[in-house]
Image 1: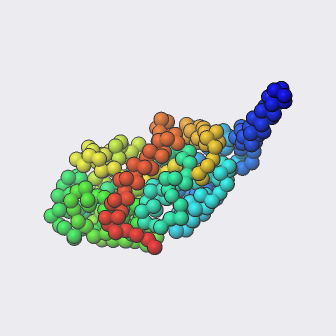
Image 2: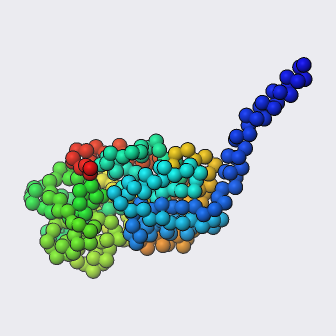
Image 3: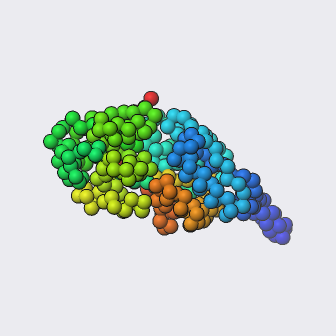
Length: 330
């Protein structure tokens, strides 16, 4: 009788372990087919370019193609929602970032939770905003520029790409931190038209990404006061940081990171993280990202934990600014 009981107990324990075996085997074999990287904006844009560079770099480590799928619309919420609903098997992930995984949570009534419904994979890259002005601006440095703004309250004009855009939100942050008041001038179709007006002297300044500014800076048609980062830009090392220019801590980075839907196993998250880390260590990948003004996050920050920590800190920083400005998109 005792022997029979022991046999039954062993059978019961073995049966209980059976459901876990396919999951373990699946994680070990992953991936056995192409993986999809969802880019939440249209083809040809900066996020798409980053996504394609990353996807190509990940393929060797994974041993499978990484297919980029552009899903544009509603400021990236459509694409992110698609990934939330995807199977939690590791075969679908999204290149999210400041816009999709911070900003949108404050401006939209989202059907998903930005912090609870995703498994972070890794931070990827970032680019820091530049404070630039028309060439005829009398101020020659950032401190003088802020003094000029304070002497001309509500008269200075900052070109933006519309309410809720990164340039507009950072403009609100800039005003709050400097105690200035300016007019935000929205432009349709991105900041290209705004840059033309800045060069022509029809607006006073912009807060924009390096990729949009450097050609004009090199041509001498606009002037730069500072980069909103802790470190100088590798592609423009002569521009001081905000710390060096007299406004310590005035940081604004448009960052990109990889996220999976909630519930993907830790083993699969680790495999995808390894593939991202390997891609970002590739000199060719780093060179291509640098050419479009992107800085790769340090190796120690290329972890799921660092990704979650940055997202949480950014939400705590930016949501109050967005809400205080009354920015809301229905």
